Length: 138
Image 1 (cartoon, rainbow, N blue to C red):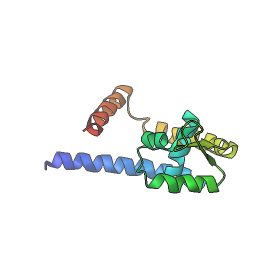
Image 2 (image 1 turned 45 degrees about the vertical axis):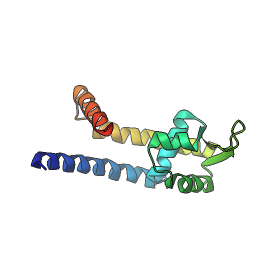
Image 3 (image 1 turned 90 degrees about the vertical axis):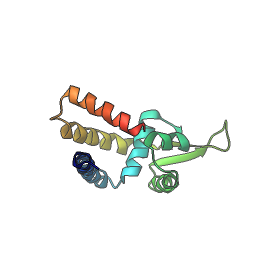
């Protein structure tokens, strides 16, 4: 392995860890985990969705989703109901309390991301997006 490859790996890892550490501070302020935030963000953006659609959107393993969903239901932030069109599926949606909470968290999370990448130019961002999309398509 080339030293340059290893340096790139560590640079990416450090960057991800920094963003996640700062994001975790926001989530914990609202008594949320990263997984809970991710599910709530998808439902806030897309509205009522099946568990499978949420899982595909956030790229989380299937084993974690039911636990996270159950915890959000216990907190009164989410409801799960059987799909009338397909009784095998369940649909998730945010409660009013869930919508109110995520409406506070998303702007803080967005501001964190904006600040973190503020020193990176638009062209550089597009280049990075293309590079990471190519790498993740492998």
